[in-house]
Length: 195
Image (cartoon, rainbow, N blue to C red):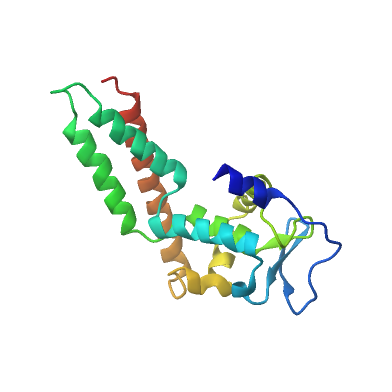
């Protein structure tokens, strides 16, 4: 995975975006103009690969970090000495993972997907820089109205919120984030317990 991230960080040299038929202005925020490809299915390969990875997180309702913590907690429980395996902890973290599959995407998934689809003038439209986009997402999160905006943009067909009322979406996201924090806290509790 690190190898792929290093390849995708390389920015090909270019002087301008592709002609206006391919990349079009999408929105302006905090003094920057963001663009997107007129056809989201004609995104350059490097960005498309990142979009697929992010879409997989969105589909699974958990990040790679969450899955790694879940695996570590499960291994810690199962590697306990005989008779000291905490089945209640194992059942709880497994149930949390199962619950996540029934949820709609978390706001972070939408921001990540938007960071692949929308790029500014300082980014290469052909590749995806993970570090730069983490900063871009942090900037976007300072303006909560952008989440509503992203939910109404052309990629809304990729996420199941197209017709949900704004208030219901925000209420859902608040609950989803509380569940996410609760699940992460349980994993951390399991990982911090001594066998």
